[in-house]
Length: 124
Image 1 (tube, helix red, strand yellow):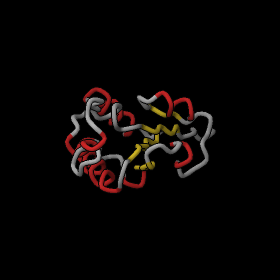
Image 2 (cartoon, one colour):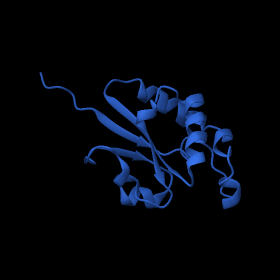
Image 3 (cartoon, one colour):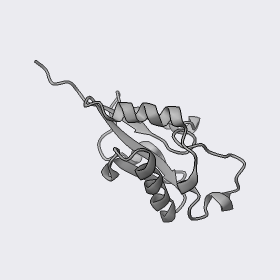
């Protein structure tokens, strides 16, 4: 019997897992602690939890960051809301860079990106 191929799913945070406020200024978003307190998009978080617990899926976080402090804040958020996603599966991309260039393994045709930003999806 052939071994089932693992399906890799990459999930954005801002506007996908966490509620994003587009009315905030860049200065507000860049403040330490901003990401820690974003409210979760409960239905999406629950769906990702269910998927992450299935052995045929590998769930990764693939999120852009403006600065290193945001990584600490986003890890806190994930530890609170999606603790089953290990830190080694959390990929932080410098803001403005192409996300697919930062995944640790070659991008495969069946890899999935869940993201709210059309530019990221087109580049994927």
